[in-house]
Image (tube, rainbow, N blue to C red; front, top):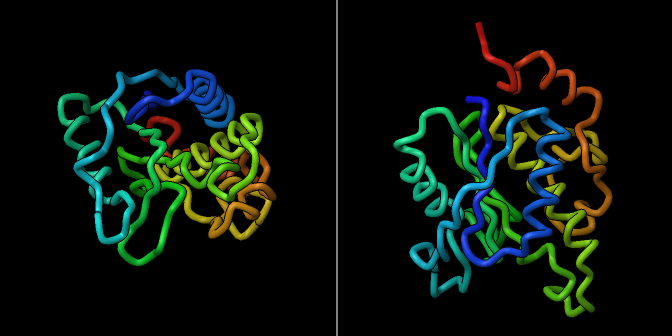
Length: 184
């Protein structure tokens, strides 16, 4: 599985998608391709929570991948996501799996009643896409708070991360334990 496809779920800015794709190529040294738009995830809306279910989105992405056994899919959405045990998530991905999703909703300054900041959004989006892709390649959360694989429960933690893997996570990726190379 050497291809990672990036798919907007609805209208996502071209510059944002391009920044995410370039970061994925640079960090993981993999083939990154644009997937066609998947459409808004209305099927995952939870009216009681007023958010979208990340697990339901992952299920839909796996259906999208049924005819393509050689790719992984990372969806990008502007919708606010949750998983049942948390009030929100910035994204979710199957550990060592094929499907992941990252949300731009809480990465935007406007979510916090601040002025729009497109550069800050791009930086945060790159970090979160790298984080979710890392999970797809088998990397777990890292204790180094500057590593892109560190757990983030607030946007301030995202801002403190570097947009790259720490030496330990990079070594795991280089050894192929992150499933970045073909296993023999």
